[in-house]
Image (cartoon, rainbow, N blue to C red; front, side, top):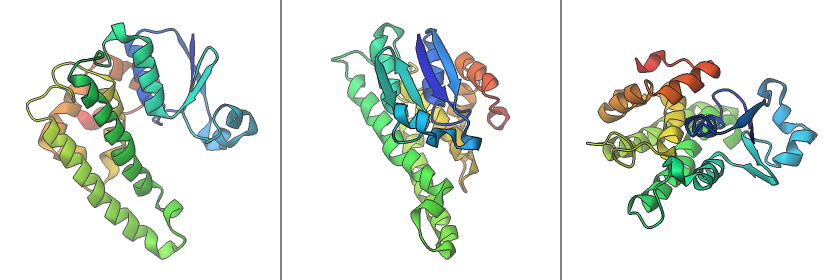
Length: 212
């Protein structure tokens, strides 16, 4: 049985989607961010970065959400959430998952935690404003990639879509919402009706009404 250390609407959301979608046996272990439990000595033994999520798979302990997603997909290729070896879609899977993590998620973290990126309190509003522009640039790239597509890789859902949904949910608070982009708007409305997303979001008490 997998064990996923999680917190609602955190970076653990994408792995939670995958565990549920693949109908795997798993246990959820809440890490209470409100009490800063992710920085506790006990948790740091599992995840020295002091972040959420962490996955336990037997003797393997993994942190970083995209790494966990890739591991789950490769452990269960029959579930079809990662393209098979040799397919043209497989490098695109890694391209998009890397872009989402290294670009969109990174920009969102600066946007929502600007105080961590300056020693000048007066600079915080300017950082947030600049990040709104950078996030909009990323959203435009993804919006254009979804032209004539149901999902990020084509007509079949993949782990990339679950990861993207997580980030787009976080992006609702930026100046130019993903709902203002035509393809992202339709994509989000479609994914918000997807059974796994609805069920996991209900469990984590994540409001899907903005996508209705």
